[in-house]
Image 1 (spheres, rainbow, N blue to C red):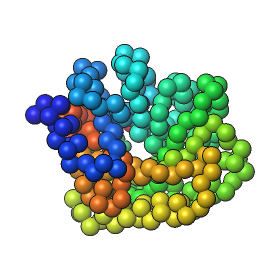
Image 2: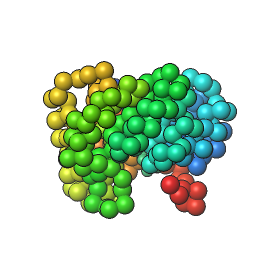
Image 3: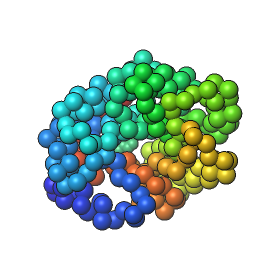
Length: 227
Ligand SMILES: *Cc1c(COP(=O)(O)O)cnc(C)c1O
């Protein structure tokens, strides 16, 4: 199947309130352009250098989402143009994003990543760490970031019950976050969860943003996939 056909098929299944991030990591610009030409405007990448190369080459009405783990010293390379950073998991990173955003006189939207999987290797905050950040003075002083929601990744398993449990856990934290008053920098509307293998389940658990790669662009060459 072609990229255009895959995209059309996936989009036809998504409810109107769910945003599709086309995860294009490791794929060439020609593949992204095929998606662009069918109307896709949101692309997700997990390496800053690769995302910046593509941003430079591609039309400027694209929204670039950083979905990978972000190293503090690399924030400066995407601060000018990134639309949404999904994997923010520390106050230190938030402070650096704020600092770089300020240099470009802009506010950068961020999702806080919550650790919901069993694997130790997946990044993210637990609920206590999340609350710690949101109640800290350091966070309060940041003026060039906005927390627009949460992101999470389920355990890599065939066990649907477990994945569902993890998605529900994230949704519960998201709902709690929505009970505290919104401010300039806290407007948590987005719940980013679900990938090619589990996005339907994620949507049934309350996801509002799905990150889909291989079901659109085909499988990736594993060698290019180091994070
Ligand atoms: C690669 C990646 C995806 C997309 O994975 P697929 O299984 O190819 O859809 C989604 N989210 C994150 C954080 C990723 O790194």
